Length: 362
Image 1 (tube, rainbow, N blue to C red):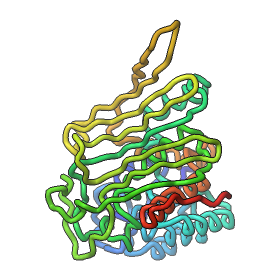
Image 2 (image 1 turned 45 degrees about the vertical axis):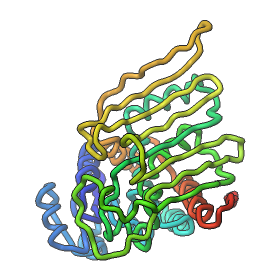
Image 3 (image 1 turned 45 degrees about the horizontal axis):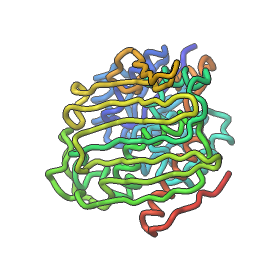
Image 4 (image 1 turned 180 degrees about the vertical axis):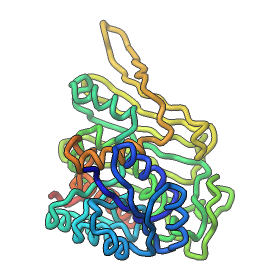
């Protein structure tokens, strides 16, 4: 029997979740949203049979649900995931995992009590470039990654003003917590080492400047704009590795870059997406490269992989279904999500205090 899944949230990410679940031969049978009209429109557009005005209505009316995906503002990730786990459903949650690490700990406790699977949509782990690079890493061709650099930088990428993205109470932060993907991908390539210390700074100098608004046409809201537009930092790990990061919605850079570069004991490498225009996927150019020394010469390998305009979003949703059904290994774990949120919490604390922050060891 195929996995039956319901989607919580009728926003723009729904189409990727839906398409990925369907590609894995799951049945998407319901969608719920606090705006019932939005839920009904999303259901009609995607051929989903049922729509509801709340998750609880969906759980009550659809006891046959095996799993749910959560596509909501960040504030609601933890409470919805916990409610779904307590209702006996597997959970696939959009990033970030939660507003802060303590909420992830609560989610992990709920997962353990439920016996169900909790995964997060770290979709860049599912890009063809990432699958290819991991093959080289796992084959031992890179050696130990000693240092890495993670970037998701934009010149004009603020997603509106006064909407939930710029409201700290709803989002938990700004560019750092929104564009955490390369931070996650870098730690993934590094073998998910345990973070030890973070020294970081955040900047809000452009966060209210309309010249730096992104091209997505999101409506401005009436809420606050009290988050950062950029974050820079350095992470050390208990094993001696280091990772620097630069993440921004608005910064004086040439243009949007999404990349992880690393230096290993046997080879270096990079997974990179460069945009011609900020936020316009059709202008993006992807690359995947390894850098080695062979026969006394510097050799750069250009790794050819299929194009994926969804940046792994569809494949990530497929992995969730296959993990539930036991045919694939999960691309991420709750423990890894907790470590990522510990880094983000420490970044904001370091930026506020001006001091390095030690991360408590598990």
